[in-house]
Length: 150
Image (cartoon, rainbow, N blue to C red; front, side, top):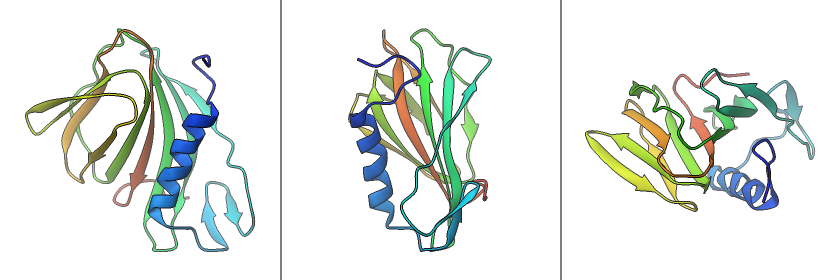
């Protein structure tokens, strides 16, 4: 099992599958601080949050279709307080790799297990939190709307 700040092959595979589902990025399309023209590695940058969670920022850029896209990995220890409900102005796909999450949206709370995917539609008032007894790790892909462009 990996430590809280590591990403294993299975988790990397989940992120790769998310990218495959989106299509591809055109040659010469800018993502993050570089340009894709050949095979490339996107280094992640660790951001330690005040509430004890970690966020690995992987990339932010624009797809060939013109949509902005951002990807990060969230690592949330058990017992971390819930975040406030908030409205997003983009769409999100959240792939759960480890731990149990709760997803509150539209007055409903869904329990989410590892291997599941959450879709958060544009304009949804929502929150996601670790509702389990172990660390939760999940991948977030933000698409369109107010997603930061490179």
